[in-house]
Image 1 (cartoon, rainbow, N blue to C red):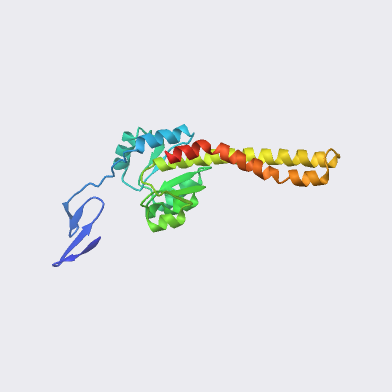
Image 2: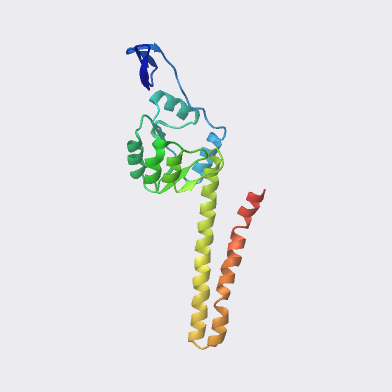
Length: 210
């Protein structure tokens, strides 16, 4: 930000405020950790995820945050441009990007799964695949739990459906059951899948009610 005030040229830069290119005031802006940050990162690691912070902020500020989160030097990168963030994401197989700012939009779009957290800017919302409607990072851990449990149910249902239909077709083909009986039995596979889904998601549904 820059402009003239009563003939004097002022600039606001990352390091401070300048009057006619001379530093007249300095300031330090630093993010504060969310109250659930440490617990959420622990939960994400328990899901088998590798954590890395990608930030456009100054090295010192990012290092201080990383130390509070007990991250190693390999687990954070500072002073990154939006394009550089995107390059890091693209070079990481099976990547998940979590962000909320305009500088995160390119990286969110480049990730296998882009997650915009609560309060994210509009451009980030358009670039992300998922939007969290609750503040904090705990929702990301909940998303991982839901996705894993959902995939378990899908795989189990596929096995049940294929096995059920294969047995029915085999019995009908070998003459052990009539075509009419097979026609009646076949739709019951959908009921089997429904029951399997209800049983498989029972624990999750109870957790969300509580």
